[in-house]
Amino acid sequence: MEPFIVSARKYRPQTFKDVVGQSSITNTLTNAIEHNHLAQALLFCGPRGVGKTTCARILAKKINQDGTEREDEDFAFNIFELDAASNNSVDDIRSLIDQVRIPPQTGKYKVYIIDEVHMLSQSAFNAFLKTLEEPPKHAIFILATTEKHKIIPTILSRCQIFDFKRITVKDAAEYLKHIAEQQGIEAEESALHIIAQKADGAMRDALSIFDRVVSFSGKKLTRKAVTENLNVLDYDIYFSATDLILENNIPELLLLFNKTLSLGFDGHHFITGLASHFRDLMVCQHPDTLDLLEVGEDVKQQYQEQSKKASKEFLLKAIDMANDCDLKYKTSKNQRLLVELALMKLASITYDGEKKNSNFIIPASFFAGKTSISNGTIPTPNNGSVPMPKVEKPVPVQSTSKEPIKEAPEPEKAKEELVSEPKESYQPKKINIKTSEKRVSGLSLSSIKVKKEHENTKSPNIAEEDLPNDAFEEKDMQEHWDDFVHQLEKQGRKILASNLQTDVPKLKNENTIWIELPNDTMKKEIEREQSLMLDYLKQKLNNYSISLYITVNEEVAKKFAFTPEEKYEKLKEKNPNIELLRKEFDLDF
Image 1 (tube, rainbow, N blue to C red):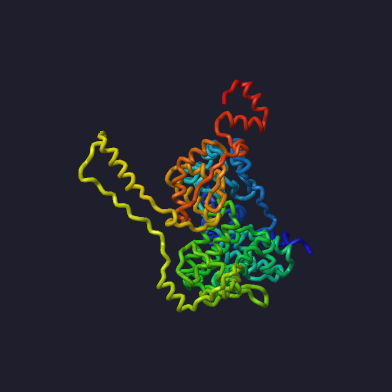
Image 2 (cartoon, rainbow, N blue to C red; image 1 turned 120 degrees about the horizontal axis):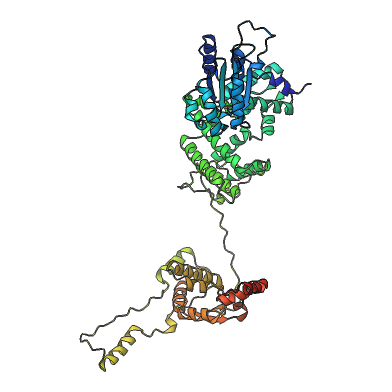
């Protein structure tokens, strides 16, 4: 069997009728040739692979035919091709101009095809401009480019412009189907559509992909073989993902994404394909936009069935979330987590268990204990109700003391006891400050007496037994300690907050908090402001016997460098060569 690439090349366009998707342009060129109205300077512009250079070659052959169609006529000597991407200098254009002066030996015209003309330099354009303004009667120039905006206006104004459009997926798939029938290849319609989509409007690329896939899979071309060869995710992946999203099945959705990653696809490919899938589902919901769905008839049926399950509001939110994930993907440091969060949010859109915002994710308790017995998968939830956890009865604990164990009161009696005997809570005594009716001068002896009376009124003596002294755990104390530090940071007291974060506070005994600091300076700072900390902890822990014990550890102090001299010594310990550098350049520290 001969390589299929040889047989596929003969299906490249040989006449204007074979050019796919450019019928309006080819009809215009055919009419211009028949009525002798063809311009001497033509510009073919459009995307790559749509037939610009091919049409130029067909046109060059067509204009020299006299209608006899004799096979022995060869007009190859009248066709000159120049690749401006590699021949873009003034010397190349001057050589071309010298050739233009010589008339053809056979036929009427000499055709000069300049491909990628936008790559010519500015000086080359200027050298070519004069010849393009007044070309000889026997010369026709066909310029081909993919970027028309890069050509200078003086060139554009002297050319007849033809805009080649991208070949539609439908036209490309039909032409591939024609080739498959001619070659005796059994090809699925959805497989041909995937090849046409991958070609992105270029028939040349579609033929090359078709050659490669057939060489890989043989005479039977399936959708699975095409997706494997082209590294394209199959439609079934997105259909399954959408079903799991509509069923709020987050665990199975994450497993499906993990399986996709294991096949060699990245998360960006998955999320962009899922966004396109949501777009196709929305297109299917209206008969007028159904033509925008560029898939085979078998896959189109699947789209129509799934579009009935999804509401319009869901699809709009899903497209917005998927597009937002697509925009953030390149700048994200944890790209897999970004996609997984997006999938969890997508699966939470239709969850009706409670009111939610755009960042709502179904809690993990919703899936607790819902593993299927048969295959270990989590079944689809039918409603949004969350099962209440089973509460076990408390087990009575035997007391080690000799006192008899009192039986627990019945619920009604316990309720009466709670109502009749409320627990006394600590209430601070109100301080009434009495102002003397007669004012006293601050320089008199009487002011001393008034000041003492005021101090006694200001700080009343409260018995220690009246103050609460509840027991607390070290973990609770550390949490309130951190809360107080955060409050200091918000108030702008960064230095005190930093000093309090130097060591993790510990319990020395029941009511004594112990911290270890690296130097005496920090100790004095904290001792000066310790009343704020102690007042806060006493109130939060409901214990007014708390005290603070501060020590200084010299070993810890050596780990910190505060002054420039200490910092320099630390650096010198790590690298002694710094001392040589300082002496060499006579540096200060």
